[in-house]
Length: 107
Image (cartoon, rainbow, N blue to C red; front, side):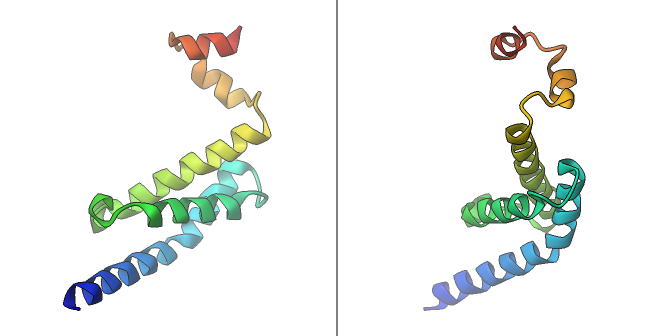
């Protein structure tokens, strides 16, 4: 019983920490996506992904914010790529790559 209570308390702390950063996540998503369209989806997907992460793999308090931001940034970039596969920033980022899959995309 005590273990269940600790699990519940840990989940509750995790949810509260996620909600604390929701506004920041949204602002960064809007910035990456160029507007509010898709930003809420990016935040929702990133929070859901973070919550699916097993407790032992979640970051400690000092790393939590960075970890959560990285998940959301990856999600926002994924949404942007889906919207615009010819995104000029992607072309600049891939320009110096020698990896076969990137070279195949350039061809």
